[in-house]
Length: 503
Image (cartoon, rainbow, N blue to C red; front, top):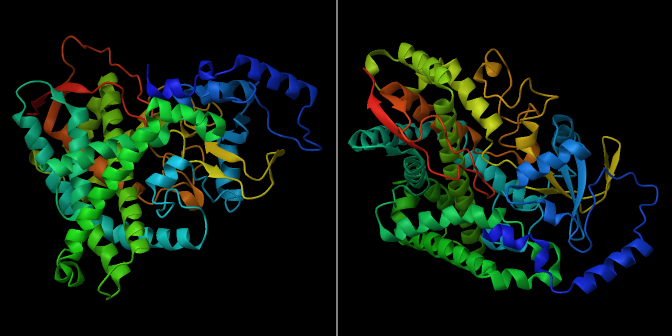
């Protein structure tokens, strides 16, 4: 059985008698809401609340619950109130109307350990530190000029991906190739070189893959402290410690190596990579970088690396999967790309701007398969009223981007994969259209969206331009569409395909 399943099942509780007594007490002395009007809630169990309803794939299970109880749904994880928003209107109120109230993140034991105690951008609580950190990422690391400066990396790594496909004598494991492609590209952008060929580098890439799994795990012990022993017995705590230690050792080693070569980064020798930019900012001409500043640098680098690799490879994996499921869409995309790019030459980025169907395919993939289906949680800093319901301070807020992307109120035939819905449409992924939030919205919108999309568009266009694709014979048209749990959600089984050169 999957580790995540074990952690959220009610049968692990040691004393059924105790649970029964607690249930009786709650019936005899129910909690009073006074004049409050809380959002509708499904029935909950004593002690654990609604944790048993989260399931193996939380975005799907919470989406099903929302269809029954409404797009503003109040759950309880242990004693922690959790508001789940599953509509564009609810998301708008949270991320725009009351954005400041919901601007902070709940730091759990796991996210605290893996984000250097909140010294990154993704998990840092809202405040002065977060504002400075986000400013550094937006203005220094991932601004439009910087994203454009990585064009040569995107083009070189895409050409290498094509070469690797050509060298395959049989079916191609596209899932594996997409992971390797994004890992190498992000490593070059973040550190100035690849690490996929060294043992230490391979170890780092593997442990980053585990990062999303442990962050995305729903654990009883986080919400019911007296059951935290379950995480120790299951080995989960030990796994978190190992992941945190291995990531820190790698990043610390890279920093010490670069700091030992002061002339390199202070004179801008490798100034195009993100590590040198951060070292230049935090050193500010000093001989040393403080321990706190080192943790900040490592936290920001880990954000860029973990978010950049997963979102890009997952987006490519699902996009190609849907093209296999819909041959007509594949043909339409190939026709557009091959008509715009002459003589099968390498695609230049300005040509991508003319590929409107390509952009529609990418947007439809993000709607149907958002890489982070449950956006990173927020927390209410004070009492607030949303859509007529009272939300109390301390409530954790989860926006279900997956459910919003399949909402009948916002989308026509949402269960169908139809890129045409985005042709001649102004809907974009930048967080201004609340029915389409693959990268979030408001103050906590993902700053790396442009980087991920620019890379994905180039790769997808190149793959359909250079090759004709089909599924291996035994697989036929029956693709396994099951998902793997985690904060990011990829296919549970690798995408295997057969490529042949286009004429």
